[in-house]
Length: 145
Image 1: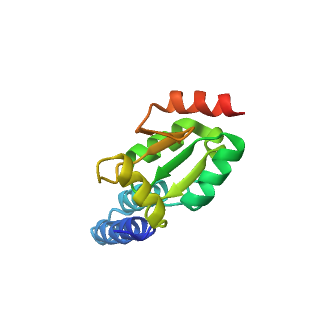
Image 2: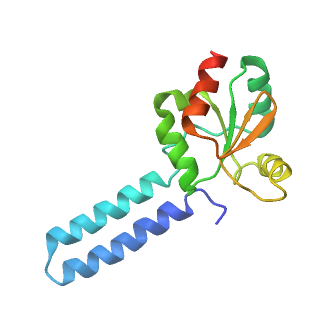
């Protein structure tokens, strides 16, 4: 599932089918609730929650210039979502690289994770950290400001 919108679209389709089944049984309120839950899951797992991704090369250049961390992530990753949500507005100041859109970013993650595409991988001053604590990332971001 390399397309960033594949999971959200699948969730919307499944939610529509499930909600239709509930509606056909005559329980309209429950059908709406089912649809809303699936729509929320689709939004949370979509690229909409994350800032615009840039290439790994561009992220490296920007990080070298401003000292901000680089975050390698992918849509549908619960740990990436946890990091993004816990960083709040400050998360927009990081440099985000979607490894499903950038083959060089995926290669960089595999290089530091024994061939695995383990995300989030956060690079601070050229040193990678795999699935770091969001509070620690927030602290690193404040140090770069």
